[in-house]
Length: 141
Image (cartoon, rainbow, N blue to C red; front, side, top):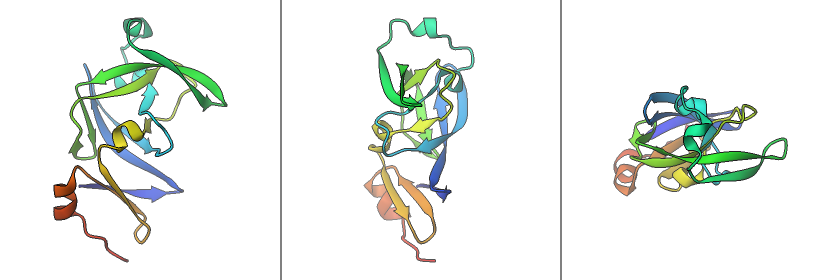
């Protein structure tokens, strides 16, 4: 189980992303986002757009002042939410420098149990039902 604070109506989680490089970044939990996405330099500062020319790509609208942004599907060797190893995952990356948020979207969030506790302003993440049953206890403070 992993938990983090809700601050100013936003929730940030520490995530480990492993490709050719290893990075630890704060992702914004966004249940309204279909996809986990970020700027390419977050994943690998040496990654260039030309290296992804044959990868699946799509334009996702509304991200920057209503404008569409081109993203590429990018396979990670490992993605970890806090201490929860999600194994290999695909995320969407862009090289559009206007994109500044690092978003943890529903493509990955739907794979974990996520509980919002209004009493302590925490969000809890459990890997599976076993993790939930053995580690989560709702506390009212």
